[in-house]
Structures are given as structure tokens and as C-alpha cells.
Image (cartoon, rainbow, N blue to C red; front, side, top):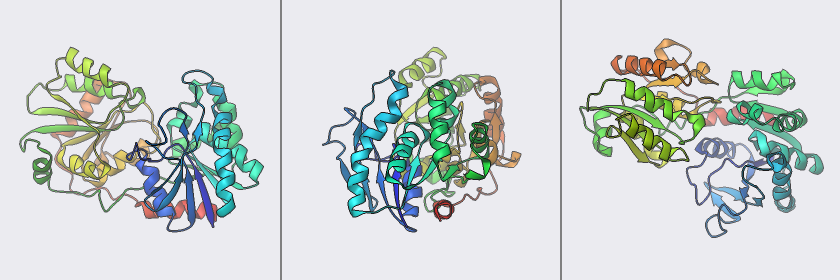
Length: 373
């Protein structure tokens, strides 16, 4: 079988850490079938020197056509613009790589544009949805009918959690068309490591207490609620909050930490290579994901595989992952007081006896491949 994947969620020369979950799953999928990736980029975001029109990543051919996006306006046209941007590339690729099916990995505009292309090319068509692409669709009234149309055209829809499947079925998509396949973990990287050795490696105090967050600094990730919750915990200087990531909310988060008087104990560590994250997770006392909504948060699976104590917002696929008290704490979203209580409980709880076994990316990819068959 030959598969063409269309998604904006894929690494490129400028953003090597972008959507590592897709990169890992599709790399494993490439061992089961021939595939290529079309990962469009908005016009003017990067030059051709920064992100070439074609590159090979991890042995996968990746194409980066450009498509028109007018920020904050004309959102209802993004699906059509996405289609126009990828159409020429899809035809060019087909000349030497006669793919059997198209997989769109993101609901809007990716699935809408890819659905139009698949219809014209008479190809099998599948969609993988991740969480925010469905959870936030209701905030933009014009997107819902377009997403519903794309999903209804699909031969199969992959959701990363049961709650996400329920939302898709509620849109009118037949439940037998929707299959739940959770994300995997690179078990060769994410496993328990000696805490003291990890702290020495990244320069943390062996006697300190550390709460860790890894992700983007965007409103939907709820980092401001984490900082508010951190300010409600004890003020001992050995307790610190480590924030790994970057994003448009950073300036506001720095200002909030200063206003709450915790700026000296909140450490903005910047972005880190994905291969370094297991060391930080093993070095921390507690990992926290305070999101407002999620699909199947891969970072939680990775933290649990490292043996970390985990606190996460009770949203999206989190209840599927933290389904017993032994696996972690679920906090009410957008509630700093409840989040602080969960963090305090986790900080004072004994270390986990063993890490939670996660499904590997090879296992996850095999389930995805079965859908195409």
C-alpha cells in the first residue's frame, strides 16, 4: 500500500521539534507501508531557504507547499486555500508515487482541503483528529459544517481518545466509522532514570523540589493557571516551577509570575530538544499539564513512562490515561485552587513504585495501518 499524509503538524528544517508525536507515529508507519508527507506552510511564514519546498526527514520524503492565510480574517476560506496550496503538489507526487489513499492529520483546514483533493483524485480518504481541532471547532461557527462534511467524506476517522470520538459522533458522523487509537511513546527514550543523576546532568539542586511543565505557552495550555496555583503553594525557596517551551503567552506569564511574587522561583527554561525531555521528566518531582482541553496528551504518557508523578486537568483524553488514583491526580480546569491542592498532594506523595507502561509508537502505528487495510 502507498499512503500520502497531508498535515500541517510535522517537523521542518526551521521547527525540528514540531509535532514530534506525528513524526514518531508516521516513522513507524513507514515501516509498514510506503508513504510520503505533504506538510504545507503558510505563505510568508518562512523563506525557501529556511524551509525548503522538499526535504527528507528521518528517511521520509516531505513536501512543503505554501498556502494563503490571512491572520484573524477569512478563517472560513482556509479550507479552500489549503486545497489550492496542496493541489499542484499532490498531482506532481502522484506521477512518481501512485498513492492509494490520503490521510489528513488535523481537522481544519487540513481535512477539508484534503477531502476536496481526494474527491477529485478519486482516492481513499482518512482523517486523524487530535483534540483541539475538534474541541475548539465550536468557537468558530463556520468551521463546524466544513469539518462535518470532511469527516463524512472519510472512509475512516481516527480519534486519539474516547471523549473525542463522542464529540465526532455528536456531529453526526456514524460511530462505526470512528476508531479510537491512542498515541504511543518512544519507549527507547522515555523510561525511569535515576533522579539524582538527571538533576546533576541539567544543573538542578539534588535537594530541591521541582514541578515541571513541557509544552507551548498558549492560552489553551492553561499555564497561567499553573503559575497561579504555584503561588498558592508553600513559599519555601527550594520549591521551583520549571517551564519548558515558548509561545505567544510568554510575556504575560513572566509578568504574572512577577505580580504574584514568585518570579524568582519560576524558571523559564526555553525550548529543549525532544531527546532531552526524558531527563527533565525524571529529574522533576511532579509533572503538570494544566490544559483547558486536550485530545490524548502525549506529554502525559511520556511523563508516566518516566515514572513521574502526574497532575493534569480533567479534560479530553486525560481521564482515559489517568483512570485510577494510583496513576495520578486530575484537577478541575481553570481552577488554581483545585490545581494547587492536587500539586500539593502529589508533592507529598511517595515516589511511584513503578512506571506506567505505555503503548509504543510501533504498536500505535500498527493499529493505524489496520484501518487502511
